[in-house]
Image (cartoon, rainbow, N blue to C red; front, top):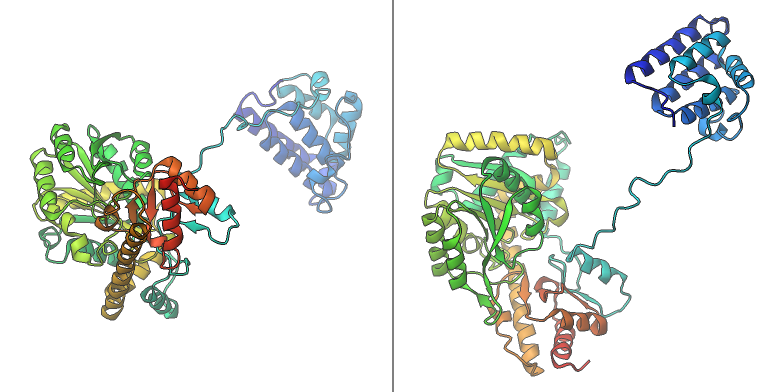
Length: 533
């Protein structure tokens, strides 16, 4: 097809010429501001928006057929005129009458567009073209979110969703903490609040309280102002911003992830351009920590590697190192010059004790070395949909911390400019008010204890049914998830016959259990393990 506009410059010249001719034409002067001039303005606008001769001519025809602007849209009029393929004289006459343009001007202009009048006005409209994205393949469902989608489609009255990583009431309903509701009421009553943009780094008070929560007020790094904290979009956003920073300013290092780890880790870090490797973590035989394999892999990793660590309540296994094992891990990482990157999604949610769940992070922060910390308030404050998190980087000096913050701001500006205000304001209100903070900590202990109780009840139910195997790992693991040891085929049986939904790796969200649903889960596990289904 012949192109209508050889260059952007010629397009601009032609449009300007049409506008000038309209202003100077007798009909244009006579009816200035009337239908003819407005038709022409639509005409030139159509020229500016198209780049093929057939489409251009069709647009001109529709403009010419417009009997009165404002009554009907050009699109509605598009079928009222059939001029494509008609003789030049008839077509030019229609244009001339519609726009008040001289025939010589029309011929000169069309000639200047780079194609002959005779061929242009008889050009057929293009055939319907292939959709630009017709060959795009349907992406697979997220393995975790896909569980919920399948659950939602199930109409069974006994269906049970143990895939989602969110706390549920004993009735299986989403749970909003009372301390959070009170904080929202305080915010709603404050008429001085507004919806202005936050700074790139987020809400300053939120950042201060977040780093103090994970590190404690007397941490030397905090006292010496060597921690840069930036509000991010929950834990995922904090990890991604940190990953982008490492890709730009720590480019030669690989990041080592525990095997297994949260599925999204495997998407976040490669997307930032980091080379992803793994270190041994879980022992499938003991269903506990493979400390020997972990230490061996960390020692053999090239010096200066980034090591991702779960602060507590390892996802998906629920297996955490003991305090003495953490100390060995810390020493190896520091001796090798590795850079630890903590993912802290469950502080206080694992044991019910904020300090206990932050002990590993604080031991690294207290030795004077650098580290990154990604925090999330989704689980421990139930703010899943508010997307509230923080990235903190412990540096060697205050000057370096400020430089680092300036570089992270550049990353965020290009990514999402600034974080949302509401969730961060809730966290700030809860942590900044003594009474609300105490109430939140009490609720947090209640959630953690409920999960611990569910572990005990599930273990007892399996023992009562004499389900084959050693199920003590259910008691020994900690946090929201239990790595059950069930295989893909057994999980499929539980979903098909008992409407129990969980990830295919056997991970069970203990937060989705209640005393009333434990027996149903135990029956499903027993049937899947024994083959009695």
